[in-house]
Length: 148
Image (cartoon, rainbow, N blue to C red):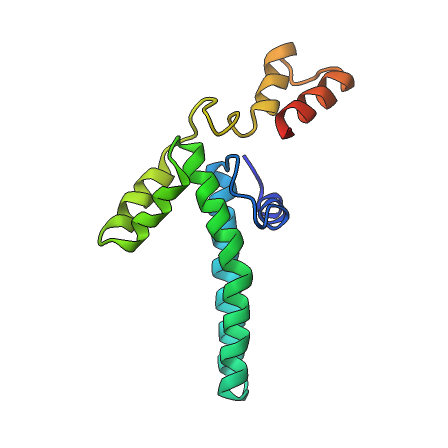
């Protein structure tokens, strides 16, 4: 399971990346980050005596910065449950968002056409020796294989 900070770093690092997969923890931690940032920035701009045009500009800039990685992590999350990224277009039809929410709540599939299951490296480590320890060369090789 990914931590809050790992999730935010991963989603920012993969700003424009829609290929691959995103685990449930990566997706939901990043959605929490988006909610917090939106709440803080919009609250700050509304509480300060800022010109309305500047407030709209700041909010629009925040939207652009947070929308792109949020969109990309949503597509990667759909890949994780075995669906095409085009399923994101269900948001445009009535009750389509509910269908997407149900899809996103499903657990990760085993390896699929979009890549290996997220965190399969950690699972492989614990499977090899039984106690979670393995040789450093094996760790590096597994990490390289999964990230490529």
